[in-house]
Amino acid sequence: MRVTQPNLRSSLFQLLTGQPGPPAKEEVDDLTEDIRQAMLDSLGRAGAAHFPGIARRIHGALDADTLWYLRSGLMAALCAISGERTARADMARISLMFRRLPGNLSSRPSPLSP
Image (tube, rainbow, N blue to C red; front, side, top):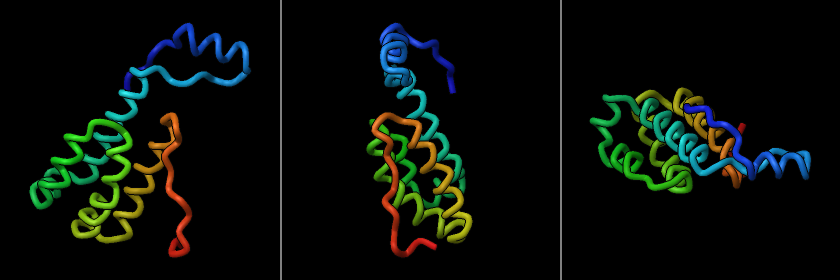
C-alpha cells in the first residue's frame, strides 16, 4: 500500500472538527487495490484456475462496492479449495480491510454466526 501525504482539505477538516477528514481518492483507490489483491491472493493460482469466473470478476471490479458483493462467490470458492474454517478466516481478514474505506462496508451480524 502506498502511503500518501494528507491533503489540505483533510488537514483543515481535522483542524476544525478534531476528527480525521475523509481519505483522498488516491488513498481509497490504493485501499481498493489492496483488497482486490488480498482476494486474489486468498484464491491463489490454483483457485483462479478452478474458478476463473470469480477471479475474472475480482480483476474486473470497478470499485470497492463491487468487490464487497463478490465476497460470497469468493467464500464459496475458498470453501471448495481449502475448507470452511480456512475460508472463514480468510474472509474475516478481507472483510476487516473494508472497514478502512469511507462508508465502512461491513457485514450485518448473522444469527448463524458462532
